[in-house]
Length: 79
Image (cartoon, rainbow, N blue to C red; front, side, top):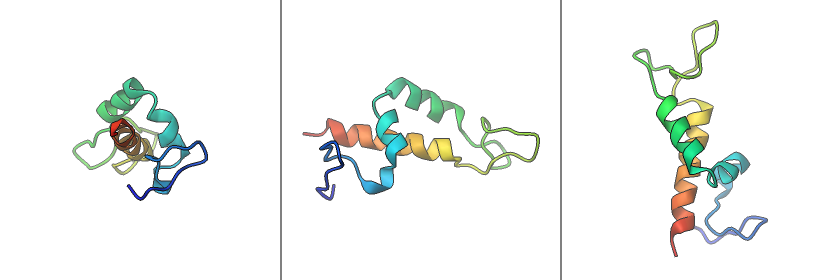
């Protein structure tokens, strides 16, 4: 931790976390579902981010945000 404080006084928050990770860090069940569902398929694409085309390369944006949210939650739990 670099000791920075976000606008809400959260010392665990890091600028690279992004605002969405800060919100998701308060919702561990949602983070868990995102990490469980947004996994790579056999072609290295996200199995949950499907579209009519070829799909999204994994790790997708939602997986990256959920990963940062999980790490932020761990940092917040530390004394």
